[in-house]
Every structure is written in C-alpha cells, then in structure tokens.
Image (cartoon, rainbow, N blue to C red; front, side, top):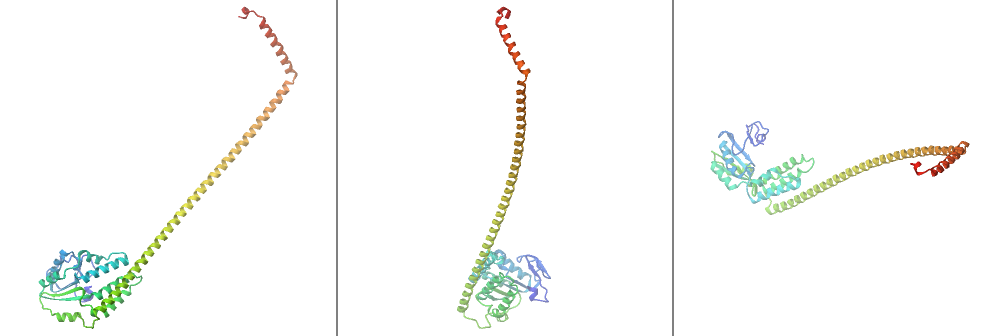
Length: 347
C-alpha cells in the first residue's frame, strides 16, 4: 500500500511472503535484513498483533534501528472494546461464511499487544512521539460488519468501494477518537513533535460536531441486532440450502439405487427367460425322444405281431403236427425203456 500512497518515493516492502512491489524482501519484523538508519521512515500498520508476544518488543526495536528519522506504528491494542470487537467480527464471519477469519484468528491466538508496554518501548527508542487514537469503535465495528456481509453477496464487487467511499466521507471525520480500535504512534528519533499539529493533521479529537455517546451506542446496538439477525438468516438459508442439497443427493442416490434394482430385475428377467427357453428346448427334446420311443415301440409291437402270426402259421402246418406226434411217440418209448432196465445195466 505504501507505493500507492507515496508515489514518487522509493519504498521497500517487507513481508513474510513474496509480494508484487518494485522493491521487496521476505523477512520477519523482528529480524530485518536492513542496515541501521537506511530508511527515512518506517511504516508498520496492523503488524504487532500477528506476532507472538515474545517477538513484539524485538520488532519495535528493529523498526527504530533501520529508521533514520521517523517511525509510524499502528494497530489494535488490548482493551475491552477491541477484544469484544475482534471476537464479534470473528464469530460473525465464521457464522456467515462457515470459515475462520485467518487474521482475526491470529489476534485471538496471540492476544492483542499491551499498549503500556508498547508506549514504553516507543518512548525509549525515540526523542518524541505522538499517540493518536484511530478507528472509533462505534464507526469501525459497523464498517467491519457491513464489509464482511457484502463479501457473502453474489456480484458485490462494486459495493465495497462504494461503502469505503461512504465511510471516508461521512465517518472518517469522527474516526480518530476514543474509544478506538487501534492506536497510532508517530515517533521521531531526532526531532520534537508537536502534539497539536499532529492531531490537527489527523483530525484527531474531532473537528466536527459529534453525536452523543448514548445516541451512538443506541444506534450501534440496533445495528448489531440487525447484523445478528442477518447473520442468523443467512446461516438458516445456508442450512436450508445444504439440507435441500442433501435431500437432492439422497433422491439421486435412491434413483440410482432404483435404476440398479430395475437393471438387476431386467437381468434376472432375461435370465429367467433364458431358463424358460432352455426348459422349453429340453421339453421339445424330451417330446422328440418320447415320440421316437413310441415309434420304436410300435415297430417292436408290429414285429411281435408278425412273429405271433408266423408262429400260428407254423403251428397250423402239417409238418409241425407230424413233428409233435413223433416227439410224443419217441418220448413214451424212451420212458418205458428206462423203467425196464436193471440197476446193473443202469450203471
């Protein structure tokens, strides 16, 4: 952002990840790979709260070490208002989008910096400094609520710039006062800064008429109530859509299951049809065999009849009657001869 607000100046950007900038380095704020006094101004906004507590003091000292003259240090510091605001926006984002806000999660993880300790560090490292409140909590919180809600709307890219313009036009004149979400330190290593001039330049302590705190707090409470209602409605809508999607997927699954059952029944039907056709084929084969057996039986029956007829014909012939008579005659003579023999002759 510095190159945008300071065109025509040589700006060095330091971040934990590579960034698109004319000059940038990847480094941690507590160990800057820059020679001492190399930079005219060091600008650090909303950085300390993302560092573990044991690295915050080192980071502040490093900013003053590499600065030749000025250090601008700003961010949220531990206070009841800031803690409540952070937690509220974090929960709002989580409930609206179903995801955790990564930066606010780091606020909650590390805790906000201690204002008194930071003030002592700045005082020790500088000749003079001015502390300016920034982000009037009753301006900052509605702005955050509105911005994060816009992110949930489809095709809302043009709305955020409009909201920012509205904020800068009508809210910023009352933004630099207590209770504030963040504090800004403007420090000089070699010069004496005049608080009045700095405040005048920042618009701090108000150059316009303020509404009463009671009225603002009432409006804020109403706005928060509406925001919660919107968040709950949005969550209910998401849950309803999720449930409908689940029902659709279940119906599709059941449809696929029914289709599988139908295909299985059709397969079984084809199998049964094949079995029926096989049985019919076997039945036809058995019928053919039966018919063949019946034909064979008829042939045998005809042959038996022919044999009977032939036997009858033979029995009725003269030759057969003579043979029978001769057999009876010879048979009687043999029987009589065997009775007349003696046992000796029999042996």
